[in-house]
Image 1: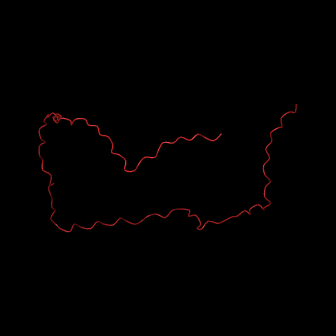
Image 2: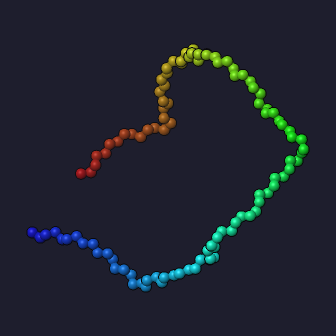
Image 3: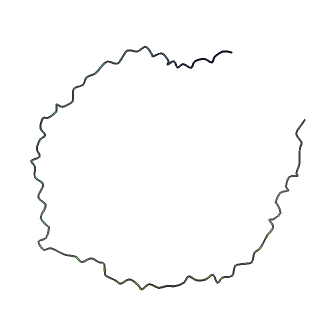
Length: 105
């Protein structure tokens, strides 16, 4: 008897290319030491267009809810139609004859 082979993994060879060159990029703007303070004030709101204040009541009117009622659903008073069975109509074209063919031997 022969012993089974030892499993080994061999990676494919690396392609022959040069290593990438290191790059160094300066930032677009130098960093600021202190942030600028916001010294602007908010805008003053515009005065109302009219001197007289107007108040409008809501259009909703308080209406009491209707009284609850308990009404039973209607009963099925309609009589079901009688059961019927119908035979399908005769076909419009003649049906093919039933043929059984044995496989060749």
